[in-house]
Image (cartoon, rainbow, N blue to C red; front, top):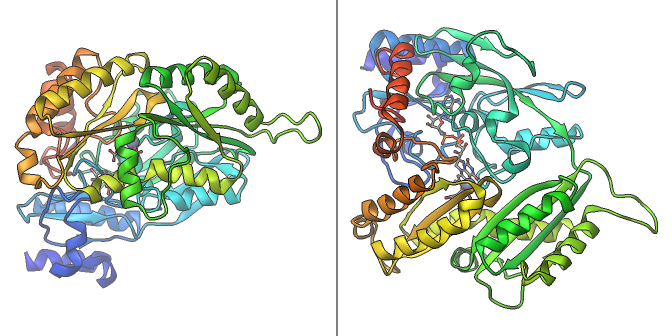
Length: 476
Ligand code: FAD
Ligand code: MLT
Ligand code: ZN
């Protein structure tokens, strides 16, 4: 294989190749440290043409490719398998913003641009790119599109699939498909773009994208609310759509257990409220219309305060703080966004990235908490997430002091109980994190035979030698 690696070097140069063990290591394990893979080399092309040449060489030599962006994925999709017969193809050197079309509300970028850079660039041009998630400082747009990422503004703007007009893809045979069309309407046959969104690198490599932009918000109201129950959270959200005049952009639910972990592990994190409560909602409204000036000032903050006042009278809210400035709002968001980091610091946890219809969420939570405790009475449920999308991270922290090995002995019992419950409510076992490697077996239980057969037919047709991220999403 030494010759193969040298041929890679002639394509991407020294700058684009990592072959030493120490340099390779960070690319071989996932954010959650569930997997440790192996690779012939980490290949970091700088252009689409280089990606194409690398893929052609791999196709000729039958070497598999694991595409990788920021490596923040939660499902192990960006980690190569253990065989050592794969390369990791990292897109992180392809990090240029290529064009901003302010009038047409679009931005063309390379796949390795970090999400935060896209958000900031849009903002500098008085525009908004609404995809927003805890990993935004390191995840890449190629990874976001390949996982069809969700995040905290899906209820208003949709998930990654809704935020993109066109993509460029290097196919498993190395051909380049230029689908970089900035079109809002295009009914010319099968939608190839949609096929690659959420494909987790199993059908090809996304190299560029034309993203949709929105007007930048000029009026934002954020509140931190204690609520008596998930039922109250769902009702609070339901009424908020009309009260905000359709300006609800985030609604996140958190339980006390998760919040306690944030206080424990994140320096400077403090409780915005004086008393302890069981459930919290972070509610945000935003609008591109600036608040009116003058005595009759009526902005979203005033509207939100009025709405929360009414909600308190009805018992839907127990206590609340509306942010008076941006730094207070950022502090509320830090309590929410640090849930994953705090869970990681606390020790082993099992994630269930589930969704059910929003109205079924409260029942699901009640039944799910009972099911988890039945499977392992000492476990610590940490449910939180995107209530407006019916998507909760119905996570389970190990009992204090347990090793991962000890905890994972209960993994199948805990996850099986949750997934069966999700299925009985007509929900999904992976709302936003994808299947990756971690849920390949679960997928075969929770999708129908017709769906699985169709997915496998597609995979075999587009990647007959199974070289694109093998072992992820579907086994063929
Ligand atoms: P990677 O992890 O590198 O890759 C993810 C998958 O995409 C892999 O299968 C990989 O092979 C494939 N891939 C990557 N780039 C390409 C490409 N250019 N072409 C083809 N395939 C590619 N996710 C959410 O949806 N919502 C959240 O709210 C959320 N919050 C998070 C919070 C934290 C703290 C963390 C650590 C993660 C969170 N995630 C969330 C998960 C993760 O950030 C997303 O899945 C993100 O979209 C992954 O982007 P990435 O660039 O890191 O991709
Ligand atoms: C989030 O929304 O913070 C992540 O997707 C959740 C997780 O880490 O389970
Ligand atoms: Zn999430």
